[in-house]
Length: 79
Ligand SMILES: [Ca+2]
Image 1 (tube, rainbow, N blue to C red):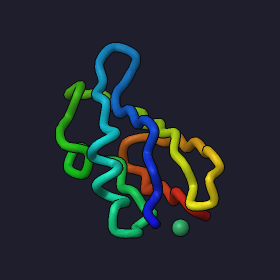
Image 2 (cartoon, protein in one colour; image 1 turned 60 degrees about the horizontal axis):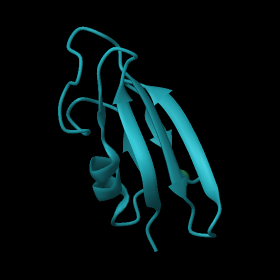
Image 3 (cartoon, rainbow, N blue to C red; image 1 turned 90 degrees about the horizontal axis):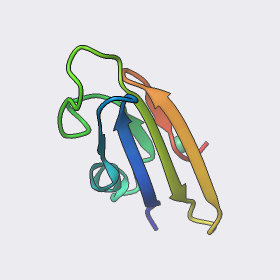
């Protein structure tokens, strides 16, 4: 069973994008390593800044987890 993404955000305090659907698509096939980039998340919500990323999601075991990072990171959703 894939992870269930509750919410995911990519951007900065000024501009950002809800990337819940993009992250859900990345993890839909069981992959749990998510590259944080304009390419993987569907565009650049604030050109010229280093974007932040945060997500809240259900693990397979039913618990809720959160993860944060920055543009350029690869985040491991299930360690
Ligand atoms: Ca993993």
